[in-house]
Amino acid sequence: MHAFDLTRRDFMKLAAVPLLPIQSPPVDPWQETSAILARIKDPVFPDRDFDVSRYKSINDAITACSEAGGGRVIVPAGIRTIDPIRLRSRVNLHLSAGAILKFTTDPQRYLPAVFTRWEGTELMNYSPFIYAFDQTDIAITEAVFGEKVARLPVLPANGFSESTDATRFNGSFKWSLKEAPRIEKYFAQSFGRQLPVTALGQSATHNRLGFDHHDAMDVAVHPDSTEGKALIQELRKMGIPFIAFRGAVPGTSTGPHIHVGRPSTRVTRG
Image 1 (tube, helix red, strand yellow):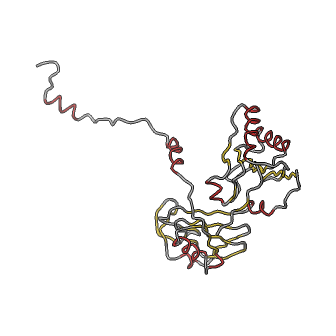
Image 2 (image 1 turned 45 degrees about the vertical axis):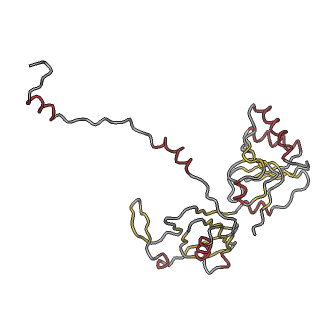
Image 3 (image 1 turned 30 degrees about the vertical axis):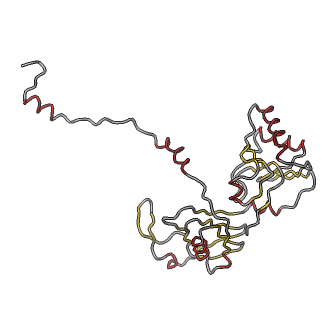
């Protein structure tokens, strides 16, 4: 018998030894965050408005909007006591400034039961305040500060106004996008990098928000940062009008930035 030959008994002993699975190194699920976020896209809604006051209920307006192919359902200012909301595809439920929704306290209005979850357990239960199932491209937006900005008094020439939300300067310089290279040159010389322009003229974001931004420029710097303070000082020195937002403003600003140019006007919807 050769050294590498096995007897039947030896083979049975080896076969009885449990095989250990080959384990892959653990994968951190947070590493998938970037890939998941990259798949998320802002919904795009048709340029069409449905005023809730023209319908018997918010849900009727939502249904009409969805069946028409989508759009924006506008809830005007005022206090309303309502039934649970059922969102549908391609509908942006938009609350105007001063709109307050109070949901009914009648339990029967939350029936029939809907498919939902309670502490991670799938079940049939009372409807939540706002519900959607198997729907796509939906949003709930509001206009609070954004509409207030539109109603703010016009500043005098070279007038300056500052609040916790935004800083405004009504420079008398006749601004146009042709002047953008001046700002870019100043920023590059001052900070050794390109001006972080997020929108030069009209953009898809401004189309979605409904603003005429064709002759304005958005710069992605926080107005309270070193770069932001210096840019604001330079814009005032040049007499260039601007609005500096310190954070996201529903219906107006997606985040902190400096809007260079005259305030964008709201596009009239037909």
